[in-house]
Length: 124
Image (tube, rainbow, N blue to C red; front, top):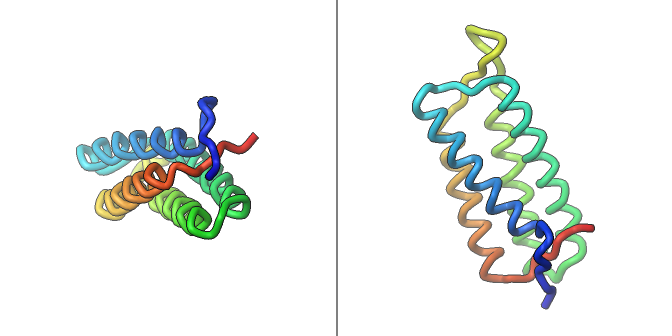
C-alpha cells in the first residue's frame, strides 16, 4: 500500500477541484454562463490534474490504476464541458449545467473511491 504524503497529494488536489467545480456549477446554474478567463483557467487546471492522474495510473497497482484512470477521464470530461465557447459576448461562455453537474457528481464518486483505497501518492 502506498503512503499519502501531506504536501499537496493528488487526492487532496482532486478534492479541491471537486469543490471548485461544485462552486462553479452553482454559478452556472444561477446565470447560465461563466467568464472566458475563468473557464480557461479551470480547463487548464482540469487538464493538468488529469495528466497527473494518467501518470499516476502507471505507477500504482491495477485496482488503483483503474481509479486513477477514472479520475483522469472525469477531469478531462469536466474540462470539455467548459469548452462551449462564447455566444453573445466574447467575454462570457455558456455552460451546460446539466452536463457539468454529471461531471461534478462523478468526480465526487471517484474522489470517494480513491479516498477509500487510500493509496494515491503525490507526484514529485
